[in-house]
Image 1 (cartoon, one colour):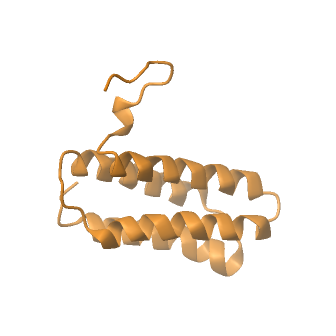
Image 2 (cartoon, rainbow, N blue to C red):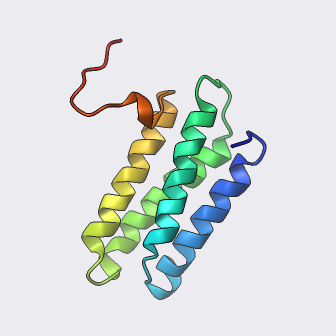
Image 3 (spheres, rainbow, N blue to C red):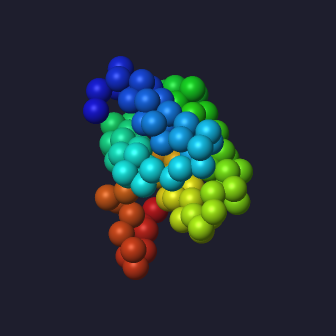
Length: 112
């Protein structure tokens, strides 16, 4: 992922996922997986880069908040949407910590 294309790719993926969720209460799991894949690539691209666009971070943060707000209104999908928001928040936190998903292995202690 190119540092110049990150903001547009993130915004596009967020729109494709969130607009149907907000407007017609449709959960598009494939769109979410695409968003998650882009955010994972974003974390990898931003690794060791000190200066990060606040707008991209804000887009992710707001998306998480919107997902949590919309979850109760999508019948039968509330737990799924909450879990998805948790996954996105996990990736968001990794970006803030300057880490990547591949660095976090379940059951293996981190050495600081």
